[in-house]
Length: 104
Length: 186
Figure 1 (tube, chains in turn red, blue):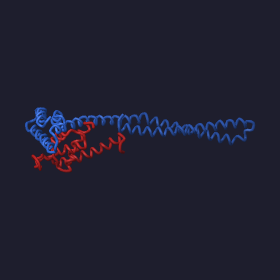
Figure 2 (cartoon, rainbow over the protein chains, first blue to last red):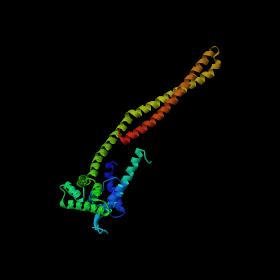
Figure 3 (tube, rainbow over the protein chains, first blue to last red):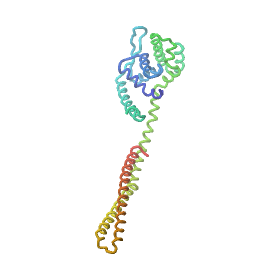
Figure 4 (cartoon, chains in turn yellow, orange):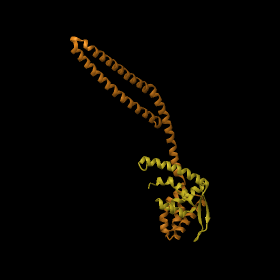
């Protein structure tokens, strides 16, 4: 798929996965790349950007085997952002579907 | 490329970021390698899955630039659109006031005039038909005249019906054209 398409919506996808439950980098990369064709590395710059914008916070948690993992947790601002993005995306996707003659 | 080579390449590509930022990124990507190995993957596979270190470093450096570029491009388009509709609204008002409405009234007047002629023709025909029995020698001429007037009545009636029909359709189309220009600009 067109990489310009993906760039715009990946933030939203990452927040949506985190809304469900806290997660760590490898797991997030895995969940996203299973649904959307992208390089595993893609999520890390996004997570970093969203941490600096206050949409996610991080904490370290021991893992069963090996060193502690860095977990990401969605903040109330992140949830608000996700809600807004989701609404905007649905309206946009609906309009595009109508224009290209998909689901009406 | 193994973990060590990948991280070295990534570090050199990150360039002039602060030491703390570079260390954080190294930790995150290092953790990704460790998790992958724990899941039974080779370092080479994990490096290939991450994407090239050059591109990854570029994404880290740029952060959220893609979104801001899109927003910058969108804003002027919206402004231009608003200007366009203001100008076209003025155009619609002026055009209607000085051209379309006078023209429309003129066409309505013309239709009514032809209608009046039609009524006159019908009245003349009725009068003629009533007077025919008293024509005597001019009976044949009277009947010919009555037939001619009757044909004229039918012709004008068809003309009025057709013109009125297309006039109503045209007015409807003109109104929706106006609405379109009002909303979307010329």
